[in-house]
Amino acid sequence: MGSLLEDRSSSLEDMTARLGALINAVPWVGPDAMALRADWAFRIRPRLVDCHLRLREEGRSLRDHAEEQDQASDPAGDVADGAGGGGAGLGDGLGEGLGDLLRAATEPRIALAALSVPVEAASDAASRAGEAIGDGIGEAIGEGADALRGVAGDAARAVAQQVSDAIGTDSPLEFDGTGLVLEPPSTSDTVTVDAGHDLAPSSAAKPFGIDADGNPIDLAPNTKYEVGDHGTYYTDGDGTVVYIEATGGGEAMNPNLREVFPDANYHVNENVFYSTDELARLDHMYVPEVELHPDTARSESIQSKIADRFDMTANGETERIEYNAGHALARQFGGVREEINYTRQWDDVNQARKGVDDNIYAYESLMADGIADHGHAYTYETRFNWGDEQPPGVGPDQGSAPWEYVPGSYDVRITENGEEIADTSMPNYPDGATFDK
Image (cartoon, rainbow, N blue to C red; front, side):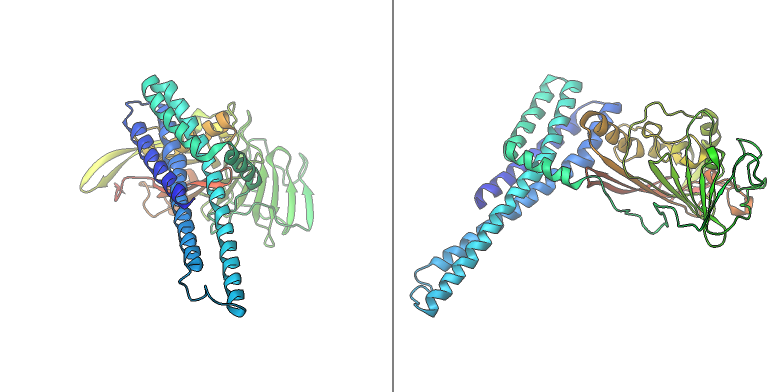
């Protein structure tokens, strides 16, 4: 069994290299090509590598156990001719050794079962590649997928599915130092702010709890304010709004998702959590269960005012860098069109690029395809890192709006069916670049 597992590990390692070479060699561009390469780079290949290493480790472990049993059974050994206490010692030793061997023999089954998940993923990738790039290469990749299936087997795939079902989609926050909380604080009082209330916004387009200068107004401590379509607001012991439950993205935009509170937590449309920093900039986004929402509205006017170009200098050369109105959560996943959901995002990070699979577009494509084509479950988490490097005229002394700032980088973490498939940091401007003042 040890030899068999080591042999299968080598076969899987070779197959992984061959599949990677085929996928990278295909002269294929466009969104589908980006999605396939991202699927391979961030999800399938790491799992295959992990599986062949685990199989090799288990094979060596079984070999070691076999050698121990050979030594224990050697007639020339010191315990072979023992009787009484010596014989009992040999029996105990053999019993313990056989027990270890039995336990070890069950572990490769777990490794083989886990292998079936990337096997199915590789098969799906092969099918998409075959449809898109022609029968010749598709057939070659398909043969690789068939070989991988042979390693796992139908029984192993059934076990793997049970394990996957048991895992579910629960995922703790990876970036837990930002202060993002997922539940509102307890309150001692509830206030219903209807149209006739003193605190009622003057119109549907005016935010609750913020004055004409954009500053928070005084509110009662430890109180829950229910403000109709504007949302529900929770204050702390100082009367500061710290948690908001709101809806957005509809025909009539929510003004409280356009002007946001600093150092606050937002639960929006029941599927996404945001937190803001002391300047009301996005600090953290977390989506416990990514869903497809193809009909979510967009706002061309908001996107056009956020998008901009700035001169940046690096290594003595100046270049005009384009920044898009980058969604924190894409519209296809239900991301709202209000300003809370945007940052100024380098177009290299935001958009599809030939041969580039480490950007927001590639990750979004991976999740969209995984949900639509395979019913996979994803969590999506981003931390927004804000540095001192900012465009001219943007800063706290200038009273800049949160979306006017440019993040220094994005930390992104994604899980698929409970397993981490991406944990990366993406810079939001060229290495070493500075804005020309």
